Amino acid sequence: CARDFHRYTAEAITQSYRRTKFTTEILLSLSDYVVQHEFTSPLMKIKRSIEDMLKESPRLDETVRSRLDEISIQRQRAAGSIRSLIDVFQSLAKKPKWVNLAEAVPRLVPQVDLEVPRPKGVEIKVHLRTDSASVHLTTDALRLMLVNLVGNAYDVLGTVGGGMIDVTV
Image (cartoon, one colour):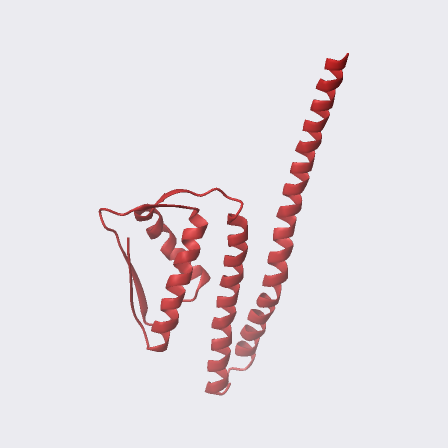
């Protein structure tokens, strides 16, 4: 009778743990969505406002138009930063693994332009060495590092009218 009680108690605890873990995962997913929505929603409103102003006022002063373009670029950067921050927090829960740089970097570099707007006149090339290393981290962490490094290079090259970014791994 005592064995049955212990087995029943262990099963009840296990089931309770599974339900709690499942509920926690749902709440974390929901909170990720809410946080992302709260940050990105105002940025989307800013984007629509800029687009509306540019469409409705074709004869805007060139200074105003260039300021709106700058606001738009900074809005894109803020959106990329918010995505990066959310990705960092989500990747903290992920386990790092060995990532071969020669395989991962060429796949990740094109994604940088989705997060950070490329200035006019800037080119980016990836060169692979035969002795490329592997690193122990998450793919998200590698992507975030590339976004940060390439974004900084975009800032510098954008102010001087363009140039070449050479990513060698």
